[in-house]
Length: 401
Image (cartoon, rainbow, N blue to C red):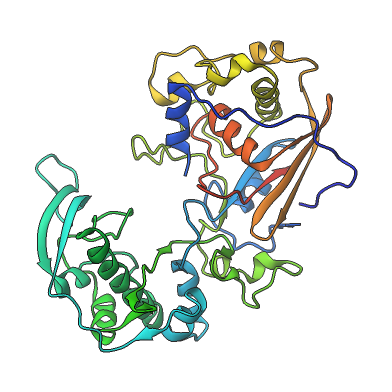
């Protein structure tokens, strides 16, 4: 949303210290934009903008992240999928996502690769789960066939681009640390082959890698970038953010719900995608958003807040199963002067792939919060499993219905 002219920041910077409970929450939840329902592909996801507009009560707030759990480096996998559907070749895709990093054919692949760490099995394990600890050396060709980073049903050119990127990344990791971890931290590898489409892409690109100077490139990639890539800038059909850029974002054109959504239903400590029972809806009420602003005011105005185990979400005990005593919303209001009790508008400015400013129009006046501080306080105080799952950058939107 556009920033309102003449609004000034009223509250200063945020303290960096965190208590043990606060650190727990941060670990669990971390990791001029105009968005309209017509710009976004409609989905049935509860956290989607479309659902928010249709279902949320008037006066509610949605906090929507661009790109979700991503580092925004290298290739967007859903972006590659959309590009392939539009007729781009694997060479086109790779040249856009890895500029000035050419593809080299005929590279002498290593014969073996070591896989160490927790990953996923294709088969149910003795404990009833599909979790498996790997500590083995396998043929490199076998390893490549067992990568599950992209659905085998996706387009041939997207799969070829993924195969070259995955091969490059694996070879780089062998040189850098001697092994790969079979999970999302490195590459998702299992103990069976991926589907026929993937096997065909691996065979068709054998010996092809991305080269950075004289070394194989550490070809990072992520599911989505949220319309912006660190190496490419705006990941849109025309490479710009002019006008309604979200309708031209390759991530959005792929149809993925991860491009722009409200993250409220994931608890990374348990791996559960079930919403916290105390907060089953993907939106915040007036009182809940006002509480987050009051928490910010307390955090920045009282030095005792810098290491306060009560400065956590009000339903922490219910959602995370710990015996704690968080400040109630009434208590938080009592801790600050001129507390916020109502919000009439919110203005968010986004530029260059990042959130620049946030201003709330409240009964206590205009309150501006820098995006980094808002994300931190939001992670500590927001109810349920709410999060802005971005690490190292801020690119989100706050919408009031």
